[in-house]
Image (cartoon, rainbow, N blue to C red; front, side, top):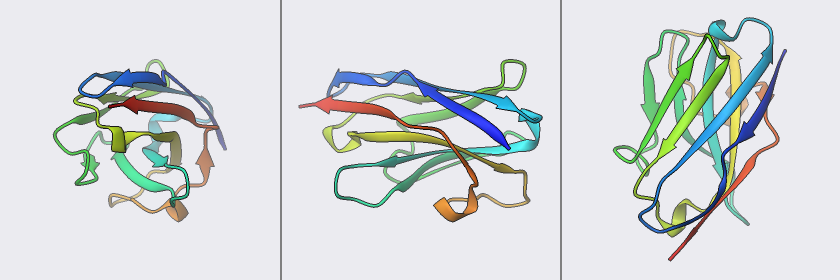
Length: 124
């Protein structure tokens, strides 16, 4: 198991930027595929981005070109840089981890470790 703690959320105007961080503790961070998901009020939790243990990345179509996922294994931390934010990006953002596989994993059921979430609010 790995414990995950997100930070960096907040209120930002449309067009602005935020960087979310997710600090991991527990077993060897570098062995994990990491993902970011989000959940808006009244909606299902949805995939945002993932970075594999080999640092390959994959994004949801709605954020591709605006968001960047990265990881620093020395700091046991994964980041989500969010640029050109839109009101529809408003949600609770969750960090997730899974033991490294061979594909990109985009389903909530694919991840078995979750953080508590951090709120991102984008005002128009």
